[in-house]
Image 1 (cartoon, one colour):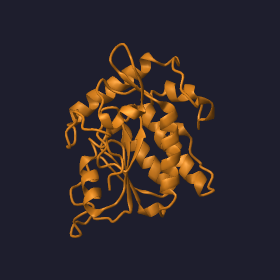
Image 2: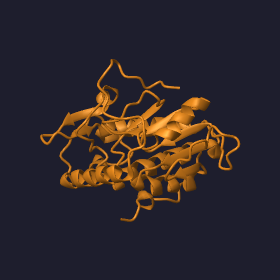
Image 3: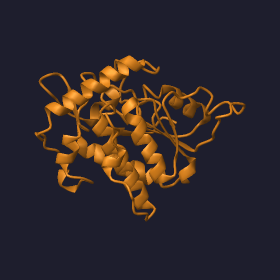
Amino acid sequence: MSQEQPEADDETVEEEASAPEEAQETEETAAEEAAEEERQPTESFEGEDDLLIPVDDYLSSGVHIGTQQKTGHMERFIHRVREDGLYVLDVAKTDERIRTAANFLENYEPSSILVTSSRRYGQHPAETFAEATGARVRSGRFIPGTLTNPDYDGYIEPDILVVTDPIGDAQAVKEAVTVGIPVIAMCDTNNATNNVDLVIPTNNKGRKALAVVYGLLAEELLDTRDVETEYTIEDFEPEV
């Protein structure tokens, strides 16, 4: 499935393969530093008075901080470009997509949801999301054949996949496409989304940003089930 298609052909800035660990760490550090530069909220977004959390909380966690690259796939989610070349995501659209994703996931049995993260800063949030909602999780390296090889001991058959980054989690996305299950992905400005069914636009490299997005997604999903969460967003934030 691939509902999130670009409107026109565009130069892509990514490879359909997992980023090396060192490159991921460099990106994560850069995302954290960029977010730190904008701790004081300076943005104004349409619809910011009706968000799941105050807009200041989105900004202080760096959810809006993108990269210095963009794809045509993600252009509609971009708010502006900073003087230093960093693209800024529209947190109102992030908020809207978190709600949409929660409503979509509500249609699935908890144990049929698989969440994955190869990114270091996404692993604890993904694991906490699974713990809070009853989903299954595969963090760290995604073993080839997990979704496609019945002879593999770790083989599972989820009905839907949630990934932290379509680049780092490329193997999981590839296998989800092969077996025909939908993919929800947290996508930064540099991501292609041609194999993604539902995009959540966000900084998918920052520690605090991923904690906020996974935390809100879990809270909204539990709310659709009329279950009160026992977790706070701080519980989703990994230790440094």
